[in-house]
Length: 274
Ligand code: G1P
Image (tube, rainbow, N blue to C red; front, side):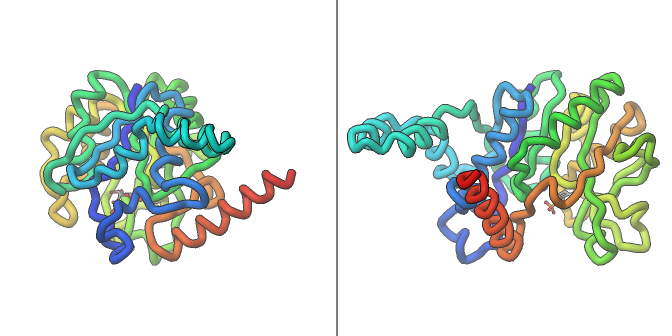
């Protein structure tokens, strides 16, 4: 099973910091943000992470390429912990496909159709970090309990944020698990069927990938993943795992990126002192 990480976006919210440097490569405590997401995918049962990249963001690929000379240099200086960290980054099982045009999240995901074959797949959006890697394994459990159905993570959001996200309709079938009846991308508050927002962790059936081939541009003129999820509901069941704010760290805006750094740095320091 593959874990897909779309990374072809322009990072406009972080300009000018992202003028020459991909947003995914911004530092979070001790490593680039995307490394957390790659590690999460591999820790969640994916045999390989496929990064959907754009051609001009080569530094992402350089980060995951082995660097034996640097490792040897560090070992020669007795800096083994750093050498291990560099070796680790180069050993993660990552491959790349390219999104040639920025036509939307759904389009980006479909660029990895050949890599996924007819297997279920994870999608992990890089704007949120889940350093304990706990969400995807729970989603897998729910999927297995429901015959391999698609499962998405959802987070309750206040009314003033509803129109920033994909929002689900459905009903709670057990504590923290909803059966999904519909999805709508960035609805107006008055049109929103709930306040449960699609959070950026998806476990999807291969049928979603097939349907993505035919999704027409939707909100913002973009090919939306949310529209393929809504379409698959005519044929298959889908479930949602309700998560809480403590389960993940948003890094999608400069403010939230700073807050995530602070929180994760405090955790790292506490772990070092334990
Ligand atoms: C994307 C999805 C949206 C989801 C959000 C989570 O939107 O289209 O459904 O709620 O990610 O971060 P974007 O943030 O790319 O506009």
